[in-house]
Length: 90
Image (tube, rainbow, N blue to C red; front, side, top):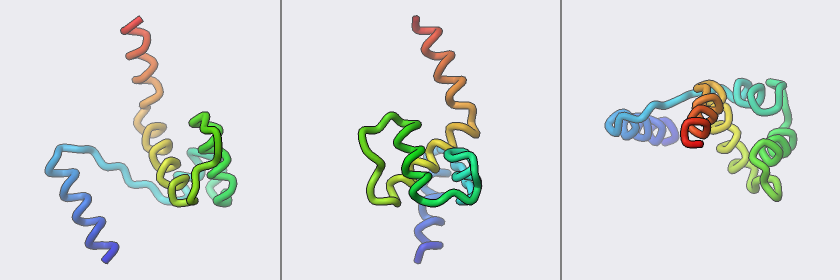
């Protein structure tokens, strides 16, 4: 069932012309914590720090999703693009 849901999501993204990034848990942990073997608590803490949240995301699946988004933006150079947009609008 999980494979079917994943497939449906990939098809929907392709039909909408959206880019999809796929990363292993190790890649996500490395991008967020700096260590591919990080524990869930470390990921939650770093997500809180990186996103300036008041509290660590709960449940841990929420932290995982946010960590995946952080990993994606890091790999896409989003931070640099965002900085250019801010500079252009100033």
